[in-house]
Image (cartoon, rainbow, N blue to C red):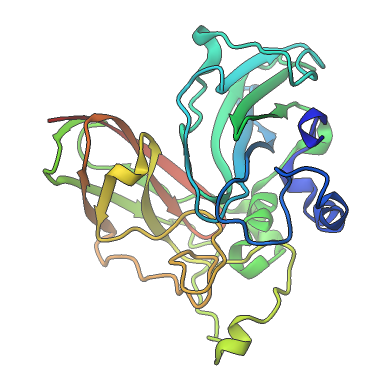
Length: 329
């Protein structure tokens, strides 16, 4: 069973390998990702994306996930089904062994899981003396436990160009100029902790910019006709265009109970036609507001604690800001 295999590798270095292995794995497990479009009933797997060094001698680890469903979403609170552990090498190789500790379980990971691939979604800084230890994310969905093993092994060191390549940025470009790309600047207006009432709009505003204009915005010629839109992809990863854009998501809390106006485009790789995703044809990157200020409203259908995440992207790198909202009746 796939649930007993330690997947101690990152998504970013295995795209080609997985493309070759998928046909061999189909049928080995009812939960395995298949070549068919599964709307519901599949698992979500955490992913270690890689690491890079910080200027102060510490290290930044990148994590994301793959929800193999095309429509089903999950809400998994910080618990024995969604937690982090910092352990010695190999200590959590056995997936039947738990290590939940409430004091250390929350490392800023999401509790709402959108469909499909959500790469480089959050980062965790580890100390300079982290050495060969492992930062392990345990996630349980559909009755199956999966883990991502964060490690500082040299093979997993990444840079800005690698991130761009893995998200299909700049139409899949491998330009060396992307190595010096810097993420957009993003500032949320107002407090980071707010309150709202059920059914009453909450105003949101951010200012975002891309000072280095890298990668430079350019429009891709539109394919004409349904047959061309369905043409097989020319690269292993889904590709999207360059250019500054911004969108709100629900990072924690039931996303089905939060409604944005205007509708926010998807920040995950939904590649279906007209899916309102930068990776879906024939999506065009919208022009930024002239004043660099994005505005929206959100209405909640039920009380609770929500974390809204604003995501600014230049098509290759991302910048995140959170707004915590307590919703009451």
